[in-house]
Image (cartoon, rainbow, N blue to C red; front, top):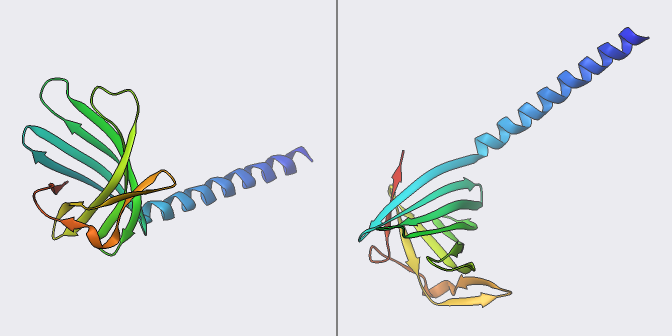
Length: 145
């Protein structure tokens, strides 16, 4: 009886490990990781993105001269070649976090930052759809390997 329980237990553990590993492998295939970097004057902006089908999440960092540091998170939806969402960040020298609309347009191997009219719905800012414009004046991000 003990041998049967031990063998059933070991079979169950092996099956569980195999199942969990196959699930994690399928999740890894769907994720695309990208690191974006932009130099804006004396500041360096980096975004570590994880793209998954129709959603994206990532870390946002601005480093400047001295101890200047702004950190935050980005999240949102992917619509064709456009990433639309929000940036939740801590401004330099502030204690409280702020949230603002965020947009990127994929063009060749670059991402152009967007700007437009922002509105807030239920505490989440977004761009009014026909007002978003993309251009190099807001920021051009290069994909880094």
